[in-house]
Length: 549
Image 1 (cartoon, helix red, strand yellow):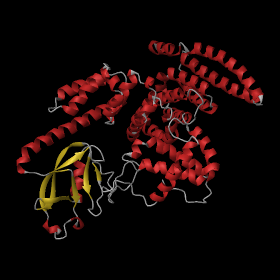
Image 2 (cartoon, helix red, strand yellow; image 1 turned 180 degrees about the vertical axis):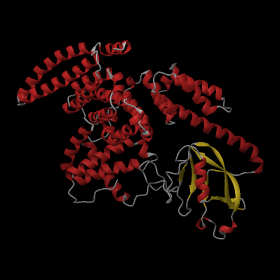
Image 3 (spheres, one colour; image 1 turned 30 degrees about the vertical axis):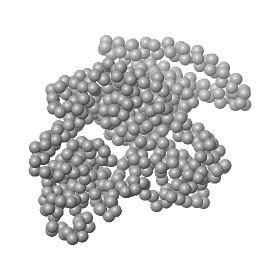
Image 4 (cartoon, one colour; image 1 turned 90 degrees about the vertical axis):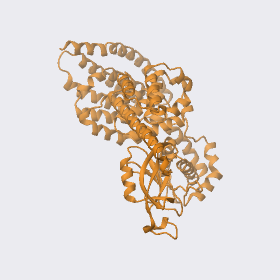
């Protein structure tokens, strides 16, 4: 056998046998305790023995897996089969302590999983996601973390699409369990899973959720390694300054290589008046050597650095052009109007408009609050006065030209609504609505309120009774799904199903209707929707109109 491979095998399994000896001793003591517990609850000894037998089989299979690794001959054919079998039995057993022990062993030999067959990898990932759908009584944070560690180690080019689909198919089933642990190391690993397996949008939403619930996390979780990881993920999502605001003391006292590189690049891309590419490339090369990120993470973060560099260069160029051409009194605008006969003054006609060149502000966000610079646009106006108009064709050309960002178009001036146009044109709504995630709420600039045909009836109902459910102990923060369900099973007979679901639906719609609500309150919205779906499935008899969320 290859000497290097043999050395790896011995190093990664040297402590496993000791751990199993300790585990056998602990299992014997636990077995005695289980027998006593069975007597107290009138459980059958057979049920206890079956559980202990299943645990024993699983641990024996795991030990055999380690023995295969230590074997002198080619062990991979049998290793493939046994590896998958162990994960499957761990899922079926549903016993936290034993599952954690098995995952610890698999994590120690994960360097050898590169030799697993493609089909085995995909099936193993499916089983690990299923493990994370279980709300274990204890050790669940560690179980979920080790499961994600293994899934992230499976990253492989040939089956990338299948692993991406695997994540998307299981996302809703596991996201709630992972997030409600409120554990920074686990959330960081979950962001990494979504990042490397192509679910980039969810990384941004998860980061928003984390900042929203930041005070619910324990400060003791935030060591330097976790801080640096979240700092760079903040950079990726352009939320780094918000993150630093929460942990400013730790940021100031951080002297790590990760922080030094971040600070140099961020200062250059944010405040510098002159771009020194040599300086930036130097720190990019230093970043690529950091040990705390995988190759996939580094590639995505470097792409983000390059995107911000390009935007900075465009901004500086635009500012320079603005200064040079200001003598010509070129108008600088934050929004334009869609060219339409309805949008022109009453005494004007389409033939009256003429060409006018303007500078249009490009924004980083859909709410048009953060400027990313200006872009020169060949638009139309009435003799260079009043509103500036653009055609649908110009709008499409402009969207293609902008690499990243949004510009503001007023589709119709009666009534006035905001029209957010993304550079990739995917979020454009011809009806003049802002689309953000799953939210499709009509926003009126004059009132700044969410318009909802049934809203007033729902709001009046909820304001009168919303404290009733809260008084019974129902809340999203720091409550697991199983705990909330216990409260709801008590609330339905006391308050009535209709009142309960309308209170929850009101809370959900209220958060959705707020600025960036679908992003900022994504976790709460997901959990309320989960509770509504479960209530509908169990109790609803179609005896009243189910609230629309």
